[in-house]
Image 1 (cartoon, rainbow, N blue to C red):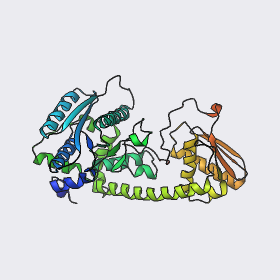
Image 2: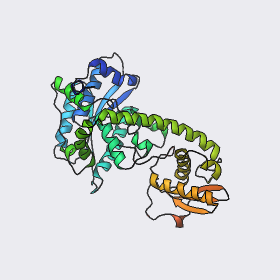
Image 3: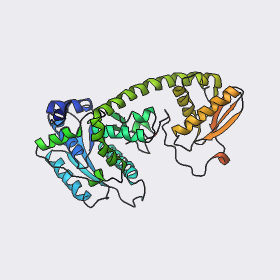
Amino acid sequence: MSAVEDATPVSAAEAATLFDDLHSAPALVIAVSGGPDSTALLVLAARWRAARKQGPALLAVTVDHGLRPESAREARAAKRLAGKLGVRHRTLRWTGSKPATALQEEARRVRYQLLAAAARGAGASCVLTAHTLDDQAETVLLRLARGSGLSGLGAMARQTLLPIADADDKKDAIVLVRPLLDMPKARLIATLAAMGMSFADDPTNRDPRFTRPRLRELMPALAAEGLDARRLALLARRLRRAEATIEAAVEAATAVVIEAPAHERGPFAMDAERLGGLPAEVALRVLGRAIVQAGDEGPLQLGKLEALHAALRAAMVDKVRLRRTLAGALVSHSGGRISVETAPPRSKSRGRRALTTRLHGVRGGSDRR
């Protein structure tokens, strides 16, 4: 698609394709910050819903983090716009002290917690966010720079579970939906311009203290070399496809390699020769699953898992014993057998953190935005 086509406003017909798989939901929460992307999301969703005789109730939610003097005014503007569009609106505020470090990460965590609470209160199973094609491309670059593995480089999916701490019970989980993930930001801005709608400008989106704005500055130069947002997003889609294939292979291999444990937390016993005969990526994930379930000091870092796997392979070849701890799990090799169990207290590191790695897979680097 050319740059001219990238700046074409989104039509009503296109908007219908963005949301029609959500038509049977009882209610939808739309995260609206007041910036161009989320404003366009609200406008397009309201247009789609107004064209239908039946459909979900819409609730726009603005989270005021209280980090900028303008945030309260922007929340009021979002409320006014929602009212004009016939959409209910709530403003939720992040109260209390703010961390001195990792501020954006904590703000994102709190935002998702508040959005999930709003969704539950509204009887909504989905929260819609305005992540765009440009955001997807930046996420690929960000995770590449962090040394992410295959799953991390798959970046964002259209639908995923909302990453909140109290979502252990699947029936209470909230689905995060990104309807605009294949849409260039330029088209959203063009849509608002065509409708004569204004939006807020958040200067932190250009603040070089943060990684994403610095990566954003690189995008024109990368695009000139052919590595534009569409190419990066295409890479992410292909990697997610490969990820699904590998996970299917891991499921099958786990059933063959790991003996069924008596308890959910292990110990897990596996045949070293069978594990060694697996493709390296599959073997890593089989081993990683056992460590994640047995240990309690996550997250499990891909680089450390790779080092442990290499040490195990060397121990298999040399037929020697090996004992290592990783992420709160004790991994042992002896007599052609590998055991993974919860490490005794004296073997655990002092700085224990809550386990955040997903139990169903090992992620290389962060897989969140």
